[in-house]
Length: 461
Image 1 (cartoon, rainbow, N blue to C red):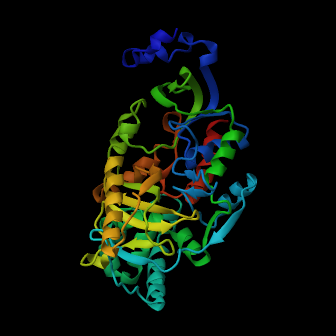
Image 2: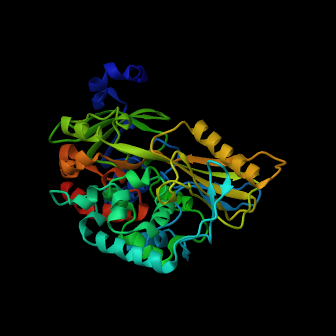
Image 3: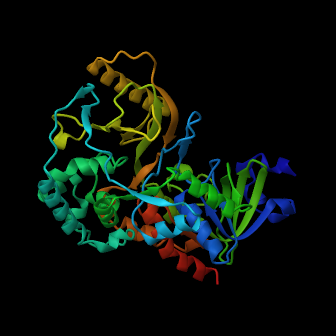
């Protein structure tokens, strides 16, 4: 029977007929969750809590999405190479408490940074703005942010869109005298590039009210420096209902009475899922949706998305000082913000001899190019400092967190893009979640899930 699955494009309709599958290859559930990142895993968990049957389809070999933890083979020490910190929200505290993972509060900085121009490797004698100036800039920013409380919970925008939300962030900074805040925003909004050119709306979405509160209190992180532990435990809770290394290759959501039918490619062969509802949490780029039966409305919206790129790694043998973080700065550029692609920062880690590196780009790059640029940047610093290295820097972990910060153009925002996007919720048996529909922040995405969960449950009655 497996032979009929070989020519997928020619037999999509035929294959979505349960009669063409062995009973063990047909999965019937209340909800099929596509994507096992922070949104998908949490959504599946909460649906299961509500007594609904679920199946999670995840293309990678583990749950967690941007959450990735490296374990050092020599010391057993762990380093988070993706999601590290969280905001002070009840959803965060409840989830970690549920799985017996203790949290701790950590400072929002790793100490006074060394500023380096990564283009030359030279140390820059930069005096940061004094605390009074930074505090005043934070207050002015907060005053403006507070005018738009609804965007803290999603993209519930008022029309016409207020002019300030559409300003390039660099112009917004100038308008409200926020110069003293820029390097802090650049350091925290890694992956949001090019920062000064982004619509202020997207900066507000990430550098949000919860983040401002967290900056004043300290970030929450796991005591064991292992965010991956959370998703390992979630996976155990969802055991038997998660398909890893799997993807959607065909779908039919056209029958009003349901169910939705999804043809999956899995390590054990093709499976057919019959689901009353679908929750899609993956980045909604059309290149990720080849197997979806997109409507005209869905396609016309999703094809407008673009994104920036973000990469993180752990290296040994850099021979760089381990006592202070190294932050990127570029003399001659507005506010000293470096042009990207390039390195954001090189930070000390909790494991001796290893450092963490963060790299951003306004567009996606081949991983080999990113790694080569990082190594070249380290070599420049070594040369500028007269460091004679006896060994070559080596990656022990590398994570590609692209796509990052899903965006649309200013014109699309003005034309009601997000109003149209949110109207997709519930259509064709499908609900949407994830960064495309909110922001690149696990804490806020868990909160967003709690907002849409009642609608999903109501639709299942």
